[in-house]
Length: 493
Image (cartoon, rainbow, N blue to C red; front, side, top):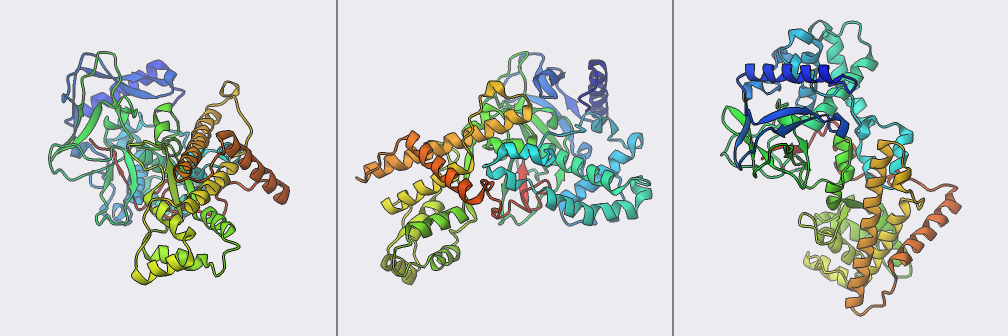
């Protein structure tokens, strides 16, 4: 799907795709149509031509028409070469794409994007727009490059007669890997086994699940990936049946309205990383990563005068108890999807702030403190939030002065995360006040304190260190990337 396609070419590709799709045995409701939404920066979309009732079938795609390792004509020994379903599907898609008109999937590839605005493709200088946000550490471009160059590219070159890659250099092969990997990230579905005609939880959500015993195969579901996503206007969901996947309406839809799927509760930073844009509708899901290094340094500073205080002993105990993580997400207060302060974070802070005798007692009894934050833990949390706020800098940008879409996306991410930090700091002060502690710092006081921290850093270092330059959360640097080797994305109903 080339952005440069004129309207006539764009419509012709859409029509060819729909004709091909129906030729596979798929059915598409006459009440919907593909629409050119490029003027709204949304590529193709699906609109209602007529009023649609709740629970109407919008389209049904045979499982045989889903592009995956089972349906591709790539020789068996090549498409089963990798244990990782991501690498397998990337390889299959490169094979089918390189075959051109010889592949039955050609009309489908013609309506898939050729370029992406996801963070994987931002230039280093563009990523500086996001300084402070932990999302920069979750891109994983170097890890993806290494996996592609060491695992996929050698196969493409060794079997160039099969993949039609004779004369294609490593740079172009790497570009192909990234293109297909990003297509999978933005559009692929986990192919759930049919259990019942009921929606599955976690629509379009990526979630790391170390306890997942079965890695579901991934596939590209034609037409299902034409729907745009909107958290507030979600009106369609995908259902899995024995021999097909079916998109149904979940509420009535008026003629002229767009059909929307949903990513689930994704922060804008992750929407940008995975799908290449941001929207106010996902700001309510924003989170700020509180990294372990900041927690540790602030706890040590708070207890530098405490006799016999051993932070490593406490961190080791928290790890043994399954509470310690490389970072914790702070969310908006009142969120239906996230706790403002995760229980594990609260337990960790209480443990780090406890008197030596209390910690020793918990350790003897193999217990942990309650999650209700003590005053000492609240003071520590406030200091941590202030440190994190200082990571973002204080150059105020008027959104009306922003000149590029990437700058606007970065502004929206940072504005949401900075606002969340101020909200979290206010919550901490309110909790301290309820406990009778002196907590009079206003929101402006929080900002001023963070600014002084930033200024001190710059005076010491000559320049502020970008957030997370030496810290990465578990499963996010090497795994939560374009490959997403252990991640699970469910794009279901």
